[in-house]
Image 1: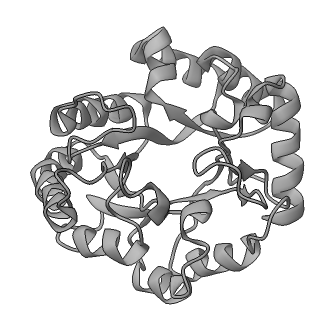
Image 2: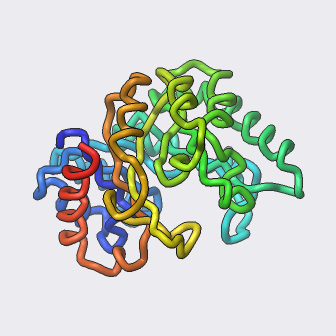
Length: 269
């Protein structure tokens, strides 16, 4: 169980202090933080709380949106904001910043992907100098228009390979990649580039392209099979349980964390 990480979004009702204290009380050594929750208390206070409770940060989410396209349509300077996120990640003691790269700009998918590659090229040296690895997370193709023009591990890997492995890697999130008929080979090609592994399940039927997720074991995903693939490709780091689900979010955080621990033990570990 020493690899289990609570992705903070799974217990969205919890503040950062509650989530960190909850992990410590439950014996969960890792937490994946979200920038909006960090901002509520400030980076320095967040770092103090983590140190006080002895909880380590597996990743910070998120940077990116380099195409300028966001789900809510708000304007964003993705490079500038990601540079700030890199500094936050370094201060919080994590070496992984998760990137959601942005949706399609101007009906130009190829051009949008090039904008992502250019932004990563600009930011990679800055991140490397601060001991932070940029983790390109491909999202399911159904989220291509508004969230990510990278839909497969291979697409993320094509950009990552332009940079040193310690500067840019890929994040394998089960919800987004389990459907890919070439996923096993893609993960193998990502050897030494895997910066994170996120687990959850998919609701059947799929009710929402973002919120249609569940705890491991409540859907069709072969968690141990994908875990074996990422481990064979050299990944031995924390495993984040990341679940977007409004019903789960409405429940008490401690109750949800207990189910995270039990579902991880039964279906992933």
